[in-house]
Image (cartoon, rainbow, N blue to C red; front, side, top):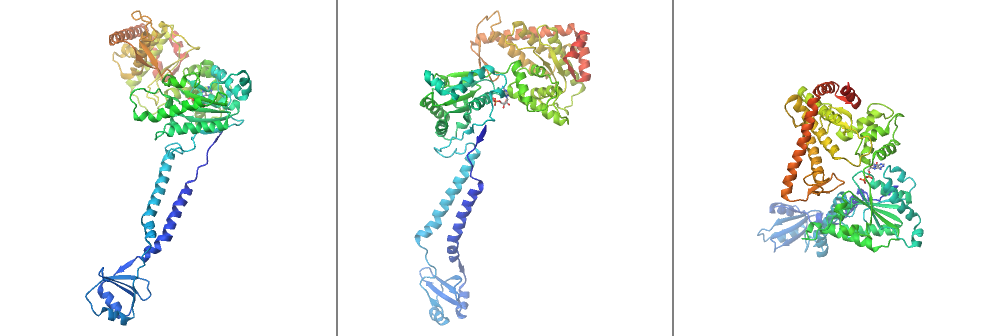
Length: 607
Ligand code: ADP
């Protein structure tokens, strides 16, 4: 699909206008200014010029106590003070000077007013306008300062055969099925009209960032071969109250003219946030007006006009209920993180654009990249291609892909990070601790790779675990095994060195989160049974949990969480003490090699 942009006037256009104004000013005002140039001389010079007969015109301004005169050629105007000199007139006469009433012509009052203040003001306004437009443009939106301007600034894509199609969006089959109906409607609205069915006016795509929501919206337009208007919610929010609303109006006006078409509003939560009823803070007026305008526009057109509004958000719970009620965004299409098969398909779609070795095992890569979004997978493939180029190869290999997963997850290898020998040993034991505890608990996923090469993200090493298939449920035992694995790093340091380091901070955070969720969200404790003690907000953005219980219960929960983590920590310590010979052997092996695979690990463990 091709984006069509409204042509901008080049900068040179404005320069020419300013230059023209300046030239005009020179042309009109300069001669007059030159005329006004008066040279001041002393009385002696005046006397001697009189004696030499060099005076052309002369004017005695008795009221100002001045004499104004010119030379014979009348090119220069002079001025001098008057002295008591009764013979002056006679001498001037005999020198041949002519007496004049008005050497300096008074300019017309209109012209002088024009030149002295109208022109500068006009110039200042013109320059001011020019600068403010430039600023407005650089602050986003070409018409930010044009009140009631007639362009919404939406990106417009026109139909073309090379647009994004559903086949470019891998996985996400449910979302695609859902949207296919809309494509069908745009193809043949009469079929729907006959039976009296009207399409939903708005479809809300919800899901975590980078899962292909924008792509899906574009694919709908591409499949239906209709125009596509795209605008981000944040682009509506303007500096001045009323501007956002006018942008919404213009967007819908344009869309109706181009119907059938798709209007896509990305990050609709930027304007569609719940309106707070209470004190009307001035800061929210603009957003509210924009939202109201959007609601009005959506109500204003019939379901059969052929304009379909798609919107994307990753915080659906924060949207104003008015926006999600029937008749507006009444259809909600979840766009979730891809599962194993989805990840494999996405990798394959993106691998089509690069040269890949024949023997690449996409399934294996997809397994390793568990939890990655479509955007991250696209990034992984691109990083792999870049790595291949860096190493002077023609095709991307399996190794490039595995390494790039680590780059995307943990950052680049930090070649120049120098760990002391003691630190390196600590990291080796820490990582082996995690892996050993994981392997010894039957419910833990096997390890894929362990490395102690520092990464730019700050990780000094990590253990990559791989889930075999898709996991939708976790048992209580599995959660607790995971907590034990997380504490395994610190436990190994304790078992071997008897001292503990700061390296476990991330583990601690994750273990606590899991333990808290087990008690508060999953109802897995005897004490609280199946009582919801926490609600999750922002489920697509990491899932912040907020407690919904009394302060008294809170302190009890805290005690339970500590108890749970402690129990798992002790379990990890016991596992490592029981296997301390293996711990040493594996840590030494890792220390020497810096990166070991899951197979090597298991071979040593089972030998
Ligand atoms: P969102 O709008 O959900 O944040 P985007 O649609 O902008 O995500 O996706 C960003 C990029 O990620 C896309 O340009 C594409 O390269 C890649 N991507 C995401 N999901 C998919 C998918 N399902 N199939 C193929 N590529 C995808």
